[in-house]
Amino acid sequence: AAVDLKALGERTVLLDCDVIQADGGTRTAAITGSFVALVDALYKLYRQDSGLKTFPVLEFIGATSVGIVNGEAVLDLCFEEDSQADVDMNVVMTGRGHYVELQGTAESAPLQPGQLHDLLALASKGIGELIALQRECLGDLELVIGGERDGNSQRENTGDSD
Image (tube, rainbow, N blue to C red; front, side):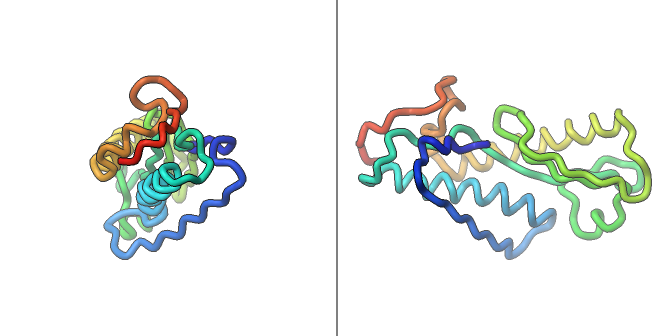
């Protein structure tokens, strides 16, 4: 959802992420962290004489978990909260606020429509904060990610190295 596969060409990218320490969901931490690694790796490939004409990353991706624990909406559930949650879900979104993945389960009580709305709003806020941190980590590399700044889906490779 975040990479233009046509621009990437006949390449395979394998991201293997081990979350060494986390106070929240490791799966969602792996997605959010792996995105930064993907941008870094593809930028190096893009700047080499690799045949990439445009930078293939189209937009940011971030992920978090949300749930209802003791009747309250909780962002980025830790193991204890997840094991006690009435409802828990993983949410993956783009930097533009579009959903890439929604995976949720009502463990002990059905989810009400208003609660779903509240959980998605909480996830969106949390993912926005994570994407801000991704931007900070990437520094100037964030500027080559298509569409985030100027509405273009891609940027042409000028061959200039940074």
